[in-house]
Every structure is written in structure tokens, then in C-alpha cells.
Amino acid sequence: MEKLSQITTGKAKSLFATSNPEHLIMEFRDDTSAFDGKKMEALDNKGKVNNQFNAFVMEFLASKGIETHFIELVSGNESLVRKLEMFPIECVVRNRATGSLCKRLGIEDGLILDPPLFEFFLKDDALGDPLINDHHIESFGWASQEQADSMRELSLKANNILVDFFKEANLILVDYKLEFGIFNGKMLLADEFTPDGCRLWDKDTLTKMDKDRFRQDLGNVIETYGEVAERLGMQIKLD
Image (tube, rainbow, N blue to C red; front, side):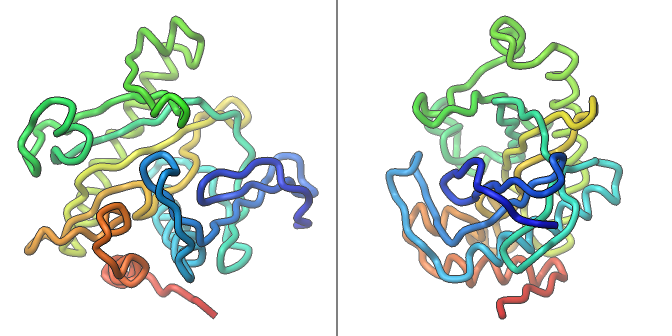
């Protein structure tokens, strides 16, 4: 598969066209950002760790019936993915209250949410990724009601799978975001699932094992990502 020109770049990943118009190469860079890009730093090996972490989780979800855009790893920090028509929407599932939810609603940090809380956000950094609902989505044409329902259903299905997946590694899946797109008329899970886009706490100590280590200057960001990968049975290759 020939890698061609870059077609888009974000805070931590870049997408490149390939010789197959239906496929893209997704490159995970070492760049790390927080607070809508206000805090940025390059962390050695982060691209390789996240690329391989994402591949492992995407393949696991696919084995459980959730179809994704991931095809295969092509290098330490690159994956071959399907080219989707993306929804400008982030789907967030929260199993415990923390972060922005606590600030927004004055809720106790760490409160267990039963059932899990599902929320839609508009994917727009300039606007701060505002909270939206089904009516916004349908009225502004970001997706149909049927598509919004599918995104919600798939996000919660993934939650049922992933909560147990991480629990077996003695980790609490606190919250995470997912993105979806359309490929040949079918909705697929897109983007990534890494410690950059979810919160993970050690089950016994509640130690933060995700990008909050970067946000809160806790240190050992990539070492901690590597520990999570090891607990899940991954073998991350850095050479």
C-alpha cells in the first residue's frame, strides 16, 4: 500500500491518502495536547505506544461484533484504516463522574454512575466541543435520528464489553469518547481508543493511568500507558 500525500492533521494524529481510494494511513505522532491545545509537548514513543494500543483494542472490539475502520498495522506508529464519511460528533460514555462533568454539575468526583451516562458533543475545538443532544444533531443535519440512535447503541455496547475487559486488568474504565463514520453505507467505529481518549484508574489505588497524568503534571505518562498495555496482555514494540 503506497502512502501518498497528507490530507489532514490533528493534535496527535495525521491522515494520509493511499493508492487505494478507500483506505488511509493513520499516523500516530508523539505530540501530546490538553485543554484544547493550550498545553502541548512531544513525548518519546507515544505515537508507537498509542498506535499499537489502538490496534489491540480495535481488533478486540471487532472480535466482539463492533465493526471498526481499523485494517492492520503498517509500522510502529502507522495503521491502515478505511476512509469514512465522519460525523462531527463525539460520543462520551461515563461510568464514574470526574473532570468536566463534576465542574458542570457540581457532582462528587469518582461517583459511580449506574446506569452509565451517555452524552453527545459537537467536535469543534474552537467552540470547546459543546454538549449537544439528539435535537441539535437532527436539526443541524449532523446525522439522522436513526444514525444518532446507532451511535448511542454502539457506544453503550462497547461499554459493556470494555468495562469487563479493563476490569480483568485491575483497571476501572472511568469514561471515554468514541467517534463514528460511514463506509459503504455501514456505520463503523473510527478514530482511536487509547489512554489519550479515555480515563483509566487502578482498581485498588485509584491511580490515574491515562492522559490525566499529562493534564495534571503527574509524570511518567508513556511509562504508565505501557503498564496499562502490559496488564492487558499487549506486547508493544518500540524498535
